[in-house]
Every structure is written in structure tokens, then in C-alpha cells.
Image (cartoon, one colour):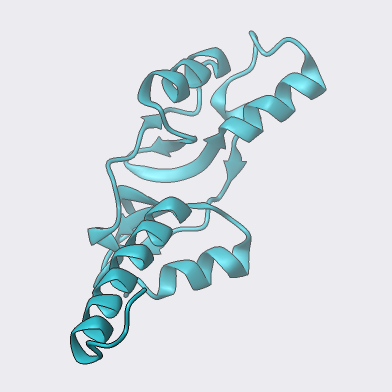
Length: 139
């Protein structure tokens, strides 16, 4: 299965978006990250943790913009990559959210939650096969 089937629509912002607006988007959209893009390409990621750390460091974030708090040059994955590559990339780079791109253009975002949910669905399918082939087995 390609990664693009796991990806969801990203919440996006421009580098000059005020940090307070980023926080509002996180709250209003119920997400943990905003992808910062320029000309359709991801240039950064702002997470709820990034904002918490900025508040701890600066106390007043009212003058900060996305570019001031984002993680620059985010790890990305091509949408046609196999889904098994996603958790590998997350483990290697220690990230929970990966922008999905098609020739560098942002098309979605895949998260660790997406990986876990997909793995859970696949395990349910495996359990169904085991139960069907082993009638004496009962979980």
C-alpha cells in the first residue's frame, strides 16, 4: 500500500504566519502539527511541542512567526513509497509526523497515529484468518 493512502489533508501555513495563529489552527483543527509551506513545498513543521518550548523559552510568543518556531527542512516521504517505509523513516529520524510529497509538492501528512491505526487493522485481518483456520482457538 502506498503512503499516500495513509496520508491526510495537511493543515498548512506560510512562514510569516504569526505563532499565535498557528496555535489557534492546532486547536481549531484538532491536530498536533501545521506544515509550513512555500510555493506548495514543505519548508517546515510546527508542532504543539514546538510552541510549548517557544513559550518556555520566550514567555511571550506574540511577536513570533511560524519561521521562528518551526523545525526547518522537514523529513518528507514520496506518496508512492510503500507504507512499510514510513515507520522506518520515522524511527530513523525520530519524528512522528511526515509531510507526504509528490515530486517535492506537499500532498498530505502521515502521522505515527496513522501507522498504528493501519497496523491495528492489519492485525485484525490476521486474527480473523487464524480464527477461521483454527476453530479451537478462542481469544
